[in-house]
Amino acid sequence: MLCPACHHNGTRVLDSRPSHEGRSIRRRRECEECSHRFTTFEMIEEIPLIVVKKDGTRQIFSQDKILRGLIRACEKRPVSLETLEKIVNGVERELRGLGKNEVMSHDVGELVMERLADIDDVAYVRFASVYRQFKDINVFIKELTDLMNKS
Image (cartoon, rainbow, N blue to C red; front, side, top):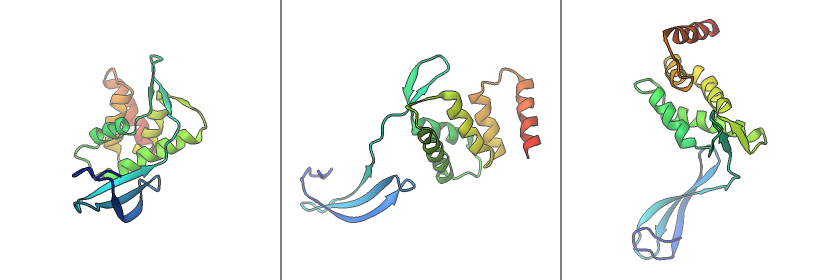
């Protein structure tokens, strides 16, 4: 492992612990040459999961893209980043559990909304309004009514 400070090719591991719900290992390292400390993450390389969008285009599944959407939906709401990361990890785990290399974007969105509805109603409606592209107030009201009936 190269030191990011001096580029020496010798480091020692000071601490290792599971991270990202056990999906990676976080290692705290120290350069043997300059004593600079830094963190690395070791992850399993998985087969790419492809998302088929509404228009038929395909792109690689991105946890970051989902997380950004959730963060925006939860802006000024009492939902922690850790909770949002758990949603994203749970969605990916469920999609990979299907055993398919390709999934529909609709399925991804519905899984995210299912989990978000259990956490925060306002964030759910915000996410749904963007995801489902509400065209007018009637669609918005219908979604709110459905949410109230579930509660």
